Length: 83
Image 1 (cartoon, helix red, strand yellow):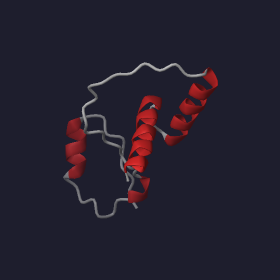
Image 2 (image 1 turned 180 degrees about the vertical axis):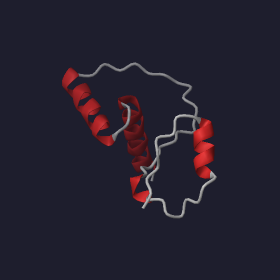
Image 3 (image 1 turned 120 degrees about the horizontal axis):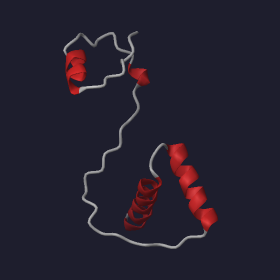
Image 4 (image 1 turned 90 degrees about the vertical axis):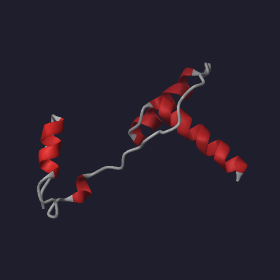
């Protein structure tokens, strides 16, 4: 199975996509997270440093920035209460 090469330019990506990709090893791909809603409000929050460190560690293990991790956690908590 073929692996996807490191593509550095849009031109390289377009040339790669022109080829036959049927032998490509898709197990190497990771899901991408997209956020479509505009972030038009802001909050400030004071947290104990140990809690913030734990949040950052959890975010890092999830592979996302810690502020996105906090936002997703809040969305999940609100979604559970609405259901």
